[in-house]
Structure formats: structure tokens, C-alpha cells
Length: 321
Image (tube, rainbow, N blue to C red):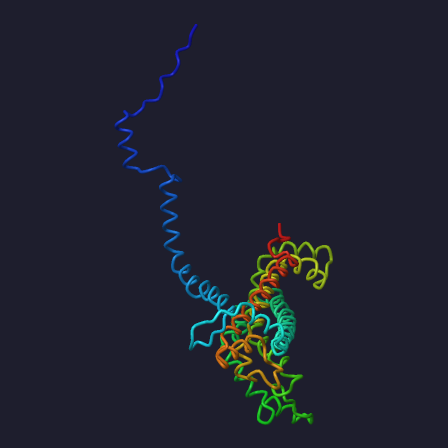
């Protein structure tokens, strides 16, 4: 015996279905919606993209071109090929500036990273007070120029309160910013004082992403705070720490304003960092072609260091499952 099949579902007439589609538009996720989202995204991106092209990409390309020319801002650029780069390689002041910059970066990054990590761990393990976080960040709200001037007055050999305290203790006054040995470490520590709070808060944000369950399980197993720091905190904080190191290294190689307001590159080029030498060549001696060549060299150095840091620290991978 044959069982009668159920009646097929009713369908709209062809004209009615077309009318419904015209009213409701294309189905979600269709090509029309994708085009609309793309146009909206382009609208939001356009201002930032315009700023990037005008203030970053074009000046960079212009600087690369000028590095192959002799240009003094008053006459048209004259193509000289690799002459500026040959001069740079044979310039002892350039190599001294590069060495001084590296010395500054090593001191700044070493002290700042250790101090910021200690502050971040203390904030995370002992207290999470927003007031304390604000206090830690306070020096960062001050500009580098103001910070440099304040410390210039505090560390003045004759009138600075720092040397007054040293003199009151019966010790010889220290020419912090006027001595070749002390100048670069002093400038590095000034910038550590200003930036350490910001770096600490970046690391503190990374610590917040580590689950508390891991610390509780480690305590149950009898792990000490020191062991938890090396076995849990440091491995899981590595991606954030790597990004922070990349940012701080790039910023440290570009130090300029603190040097400009405290030592002006002295004494005897002891603080003549690369950025200050580039600035002096361009706006002091109007050698814009040579200054551009040194800027391109600095860009190449920073690019190589960034790639190397990214690979060595495995910044793109995390141990947090």
C-alpha cells in the first residue's frame, strides 16, 4: 500500500518573491554588505592613513633621496651618489656618536627594565591601588625638556641640592653633567626616572593577564615567591616584555631633548648622541644631505635590532594556553 506523501511547502509566486527580496535587500553577509563595510572601514582609516603618508611615509622617502644629494636648504639638491655614506663611514665623530648612543641605550634599558619589572610585580602582588598607579605614572606626565631642566638644576655642581647634600656629607662634589665619565650615565638615569612608571604600567597590564589559579596551584605545591616569579611570571610575561623592550630600545636610540637642554653634546662630545649630531649637521651646519644619510643609517640599525629582538624574544608567541 502506498503512503501518500505530505504536500510540498507553499511557495510565493515569482513576482512576489522578487518584491520581497527588493524590500529586504541582499541576505546578510552578501557582497553588498561586504562592500558597505569596506567603504565604512576606509572612511575611518582615511584620516590616519593620510597622516601616515604626509608625516611619515613621504618624509622618509624624501630623506632617503636627500641622503644621496648635497643640500643646504638654500640651493637645489645636487646629486652626489654615495659620497655622504662614504663620508659617514670615515667620520670619527659619527662613530663616537654611535658608541655614545649605544652606551646610553645599554644603561637606560638595563636599569629601566629591571626597575619597571620590580615596580610592576610589587603593584600586582602587594596592592592594586589606582592611587599608587597614578603616583608611579606622574613623572611620565612631565615633558623631557622640563625633566631635563629640573635635574640640571638639582645636579648643578655649585648650587644643586644634590651636590649640597653630597657636600654636607663631607664628600667631594660630583660634576654629574660636566664630567665625561658621569654625563651619559646621569642622562640615562634622568630618562629612567621619567619613563620607568609608564614602562611599569605596561608590564603591570601584562601581569594582569596571568591567571591567579597558576599562583594558587604553585603555593599548594610549596613554591616560594622567588620560584613563582621565575617559573610562572617571567615565562608568561615574555611576549609583553618583548614588545616593551622593542619600544624602549627604539625610543632610547632617538634620545635628543634631554641631551639638548642639559649638556648640548658636551663635554668634549661625551654626550653627543647620534640624534643630536644629526640635528647639528642639519640645522647647525645646513648639511641636510649628510644628516639624511646618518638618519637612513640609524633607520637601518633600528630595523635590524627590532627584527633581531623580535626573533630572539619570540614576541609573537605566548606560553599562556
